[in-house]
Amino acid sequence: MDPAVILLLGSFLLMLFIRIPIAFSLGLSTMLTALYLDLSPMVVVQQMVSGINSFSLMAIPFFIIAGEIMGQGGISDRLIRFSNVIIGWMRGGLAMVNILASMFFGGISGSSVADVSSIGSIMIPMMEQKGYDKDYSINVTITSSVQGIIIPPSHNMIIYSLAAGGGISVAKLFLGGIVPGVLLGIALMILSYAIAVKRDYPREEKVSFKEALKITRDSLFGLFTAVIIIGGVTTGVFTATESAAVAAVYAFIITFFVYRDIPISKFVDILRNSLSTLAMVIAIIATSSAFAWMMSYLQVPGMITETLLNLSENPIIIMLIVNLILLFLGTIMDMAPLILIATPILLPVVRSIGMDPITFGVVMMLNLGVGLLTPPVGSTLFVGCSIGNAPIEKIAKSLMPFYAVLVIMVLLLSFVPGLTLWLPNFLMG
Image (cartoon, rainbow, N blue to C red):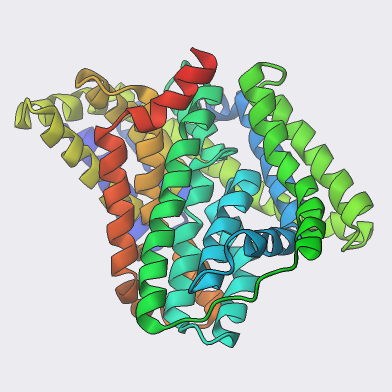
């Protein structure tokens, strides 16, 4: 293997191992390799600037702000009550409510961690109070939050489109995630119901028709955010960036002038939190772009594609290997940099076996979503355990049945492309 490739990947992994933040690890390993190759450091800087100089990326700050506003503005509480009207009457009703609320909130925030932080802070204590076991409460909350990664608006889908060269329609990616996201929610409900029956968890009291109408009407303002985003993008009225901006303005109006659960002075704190998140995301995108460029310069994607295709000519075997790679990498790296690094490497591989890039985008998101629930990185797992005040080791062990459901969904999406392609093809041709 080329010494420069060993230096690039080896220094990056070493810095990760000694707990240097990932943005610095990516940037420093790229710079070290550039110096070894006698390339000007300015080339690395130019690639970092180029990586974030994209109009499509403007959608990310707006989505982050919209999610932060609605997360703090009482939307999650209303979605929980709305979900309770629909499905709370079943055995283990609060678990079903949790999953359905995550499905709705995922369509607003587009973030797994935001989902757990908002929905989980309400649902985990509530479930424990009603007699649900702590591990079950946390498991349901964190696994259902993965829906937010594939149900639009997912800012990770925008990053994937960028990493793929910008030739993949964000609107089609958004639509491609809807059916898989709903199927994942149904699969988690089936498992949660089976466990609830076995452990004899309670049902929730049925809500009166009059109260149900009031709750539904109250929640529709929040749910309409997702309609603006998905409808605007798919009909061509908005680009993804414009829909994100409109959604942020709409979220601001609904939160501060319709619901009015928090004073407008809180908007400063919301912007501060959003800025903190955005700074981290943009730094990672910039350094990941430079790292991905260096790998391309060293022809790493071509080498890996050739190696994988030499292992087997069977598309099923190759796809299983690609899934294993993504599942493994998802446990040790954050999602955004991994999308930027892995997409240029693995997309040519799956294209060579006939997989549509829309399908691969959704499959990649779900694989990396499992990584968010898995140590040692597992940011969603850490947030859930922090809210539930539970040790990570115990929760990770009790997650096994939920991991099984997620992996089955990964395989289903990998080998039944119609699940991801039917809706985009039907609505957009």
